[in-house]
Length: 171
Image (cartoon, rainbow, N blue to C red):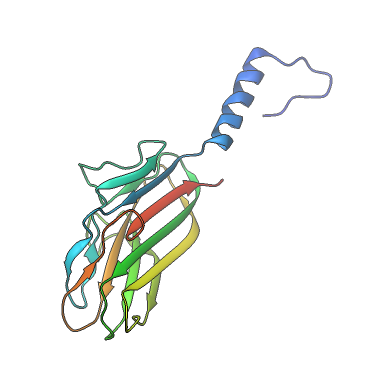
């Protein structure tokens, strides 16, 4: 929006400016989490994490019922994306989080846009986070998958502060 020096400011200019300020004050953002976690995360398999609860959702980006693993991008732009998962204690193998774009619930679908991996904490559960700022088109969606290589099944913990996915528009 450009207004020339000396030009009159019209009501439409004020409305446009007010809309832009409101978008800056309250950008689209969503934080969804898994209340139950993933009871049996299979060895060496990307497992989709269901996100059946929300801390907040300012722009209808997430549904706790339909496709609850997804956060849908409501408008094109740059978004800060963060994901976290917690695994039960086990000292063997590695733990990983994969955030995928438009994956349709498949660990091999869409495009992997974020990945973090680490060795487990031997005496306690393992927590892992990944974060980035990424550019999305309108109606893109992201999903979180976990992977572990302990040799058996492990639980991915549930709860608001245990396993979650967040997206917030920053530009």
